[in-house]
Length: 244
Length: 257
Image 1 (cartoon, rainbow over the protein chains, first blue to last red):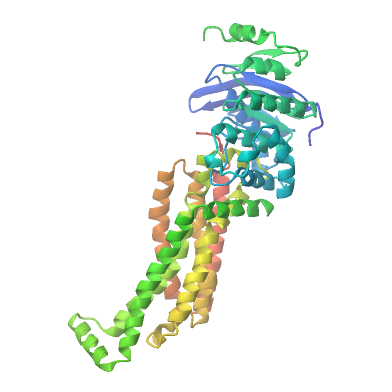
Image 2 (image 1 turned 120 degrees about the horizontal axis):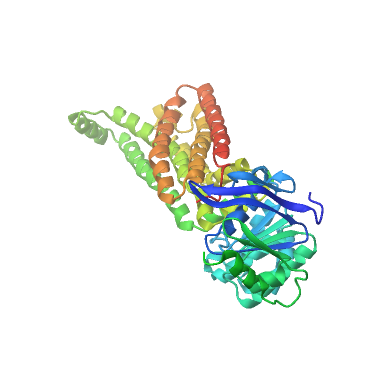
């Protein structure tokens, strides 16, 4: 159990290579409970790899990554269920309905079907998904599937929520709901990391943003994430990445 | 245990949503049973008509075979085929079980759930075994007990439910050997990156193993209950070891391409 505001993710000199290709190196950072850390950067800059390292789904080839004080990869092996994930690919069973999918994943986390329904239905209403809830997932649009994936991550109670381009297939209203929920969860003490290409959203939601291109090139902190976006992130991006 | 049951339940639910696949499995049993059943019934009918039977015997001698040898071969083949189907079906169902999660993109979410790799494999195997096992109990049980009552097959009745060793093979040997074959299929599906690789290994390697298991089970019936029990226990140990090793093998990067 991680106490609120304590570092949930700690990366010390972490890096990851695939064969001879170094994707990430010299990563030293923390993500604490109650904050949303944004990750932006160019395509192929290692943003998703960074998230997978945090989730423990990839083993670092250099350094260490811990979640709640436990080595992240070991955490996924011991099945602690501390990490929630939303990716651009929804990751649902196409032959099952949305409700059945949610009940399946909720069941793995020890939630009874009724409990899953009670938690999911307000979220489904907010995301305007009620009509597609009992449809087979394979018959839903990608955007609807993405909303289900989002509900799955939010109805569970992880210590760390990771989002990898979660709004890729979402309409503006659903994107807004997602960002509101992310902020709400962070304010409730969860640690959140958000990979996105939407700099405005990153400025609006995140407490600080990491500009990643093989390593953390620059970190931009926002004193008040609720302030109207002013666009300093774009300037910082251009300065950090330059003509790549 | 909760995680295993949840994974198995979802696996069964997905199979239920593919009724054609289940129909094909059931139809395969039905075809074998009807074909051999008709063959045995025709012989049974003829055996009550001495003139017709004498004619058949005469013609078969001309072909260099006897009625008894033909029945011996037919009963052994039929009983073996019946026992082969269960491990074969479980191999087919399990051969893409974990790979299916990779294809649907659900694998990372399963890895992040409070379910160990071992529980994941056991749940997948249990789910893959559910329908084949139900069909085995229904089709093999019913057909063997009914055919075993034919007067013609009295000398071979021990292969069709008239011996304790057959019941051990039916209720323990075949399911345990299917669990072993299914554990191999599940691990192959977890390690494969594409359906073609998974199906090649499953079809060639495990398919042949399943055929062998069917013949071993039927040949072992005459050896008695103890041998059948030993075979079943051996298969369960092998299945447990396979899943243990498999869980270790898939413990590395699950998200890597």
